[in-house]
Image 1 (cartoon, helix red, strand yellow):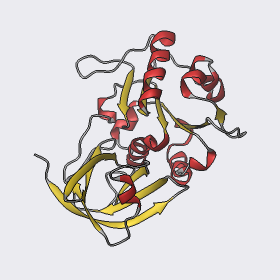
Image 2 (image 1 turned 180 degrees about the vertical axis):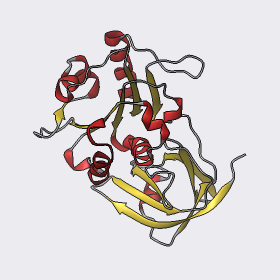
Image 3 (image 1 turned 135 degrees about the vertical axis):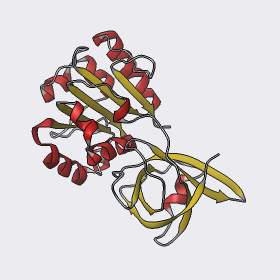
Length: 249
């Protein structure tokens, strides 16, 4: 049974609507970077809960979640309206297996995300630690609709300084063209080799592991390309493979 504790709101950082970051303080149990918490609100005497991945490193004292307001959503709009000092309820324990501990050692680790699903990767990269040492190169890919939705560039720039040439970051936008970004959607950009050409790293079943986190459509279509074009297989706890996935809703 899930144990619930109070969390105090430190800040609601509002980006270009509908995106925001919720920053809380709560005495949770230690978690592993990549895991998620359950957040609860009470509406009309009903308890509504949703899962959100941490953006912050497990070493940070505050907890951060990157969230998009959903039209007619039961919880996101209420979270968006919170003020510093408000209290909400969060699970004391964290959950999930979308962590670097579950990824086999390999040469190149790709972290591919859409929208708010960049959160778990930022947690992993800020945390660092022994699991990061399993990889010679780390490629972070963040795909959004518009360039003003790339809200964590300041954090990513710090990660670049932390890892140096080991780290590559590639931005993708799908609804406007920008010279700093690739244009299009992840499955097609992989199919056409555009991402590999841009970052000068090739996908190969002998030296590549790919983490996918984002909307179910992206996961489904990207997995199809990776399986059919590169012969990559899903990573399972009972059988090691090349692709680790997490649906972000």
